[in-house]
Each structure stands twice: as C-alpha cells, then as structure tokens.
Length: 186
Image 1 (cartoon, rainbow, N blue to C red):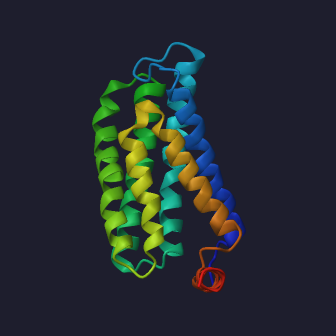
Image 2: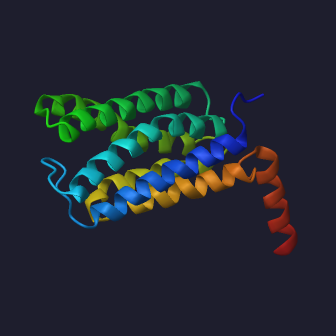
C-alpha cells in the first residue's frame, strides 16, 4: 500500500504544475533573475525556486507511479536531491544576492536537467512507456524556459497530476482504457 494516496499525490502534482506554469508566465515578461529589483523580478526568482523545490518529490512520485524499477527510482531520487539543491542555491544566490551559490546552482541544475533525458529513456524502455512523456516534456520546457517553457512544464505536471488524481495511472485503469479503445475502434 502506498503511504501517500493518489488524491494527495495528484493534488501535489497539480501544485507542481501550477508553480511551473506561473513561473513560465512570469518569464514571458522578461524579468531579471540575476539581480532582481522589481516585484516581477523577485516573483520570478521565488516562483522558480518554489517550482524546483516542489519538483523533487514529484519526480519520486513519477517513478513510483510508473513502477519504474530500482534504477529509475534511484535516478529519480538523485534528480530530486538535485532539484532541491538547485532551488535552495537559486534562492540564496538570486533571492538574497549571494553570488557564491552559483556553483551550487550549476551543480544541482545539470543533473536535474539532463537527468530528465536519462529518466525518459529509462521509462520509455519499460512496460509503461507513456510515463516517459513527463520527463521528455519537462526537458523540452527546461530547454525553452526563457521562451515560456515553464508553461509546458506546468501543463505536463498538472495533466499528470489529474491522471493520478482520477486513478488513470494504475495498471488496471490503463488496461481498461485500452479495452475501451478497442471496443470503440474495431
């Protein structure tokens, strides 16, 4: 039995999506992250840090929902730690103006970003390939972050959260969906 039920997981994942979506909308306004001055600049720093902080546990939920196996789950834990490190370093570096934390930001962001590709591959070769879409779209959103990629990431995680919330990520519900599709399309 899962210690955190699908309702809590689904709501949490939707919150991750909202955080990234809000950050993506703010990013379209061209805020200055590195030396925030305006309210928009500070909102950009804090929503970005919040989204990264929330992304850590979300990756673990993804691996568990996908029943990804030990290697992918271990990678998700490493990426989760990297996301938390990135969030904290970004908060201290840009939020409080301590430039020395840029090294820690890079140390966390590299495994978080490129881990998305590795996790997508690991999930893509498994039995439940659809779960690979989440890290794939997250990676694409991260690459295009300054062009509103946060919105793509937000929509991806919110959609995944909705699927978890309504129970459409369990193997039984997925099989039922396939059976329904076969009945409707001979």
